[in-house]
Length: 94
Image 1: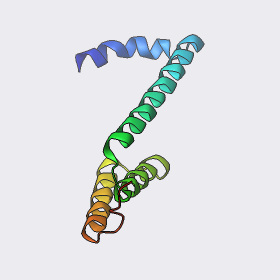
Image 2: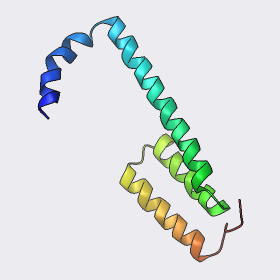
Image 3: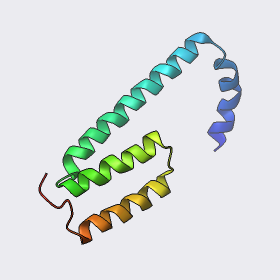
Image 4: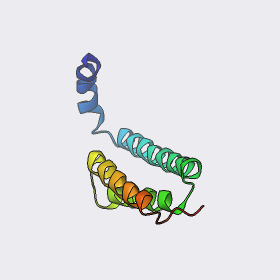
């Protein structure tokens, strides 16, 4: 908490420099790449049938394209997963 207030004066001065903005854009791009790679790794390790793939893709789309928050996305994913599991719909091996 104190570290945040210690960095505020530096941040307010440094964010106006073009070289610092380029560094921040590069860090942002690398973070997006790491998150994408993590999603691919998570997908290959956790998706075992069609129902899992449906929930994974649907929740990813809700969070990415429709700006749903994490609690809403998790709740919707749980409801859809429960509906697919109880109806044996999509329970074929993937």
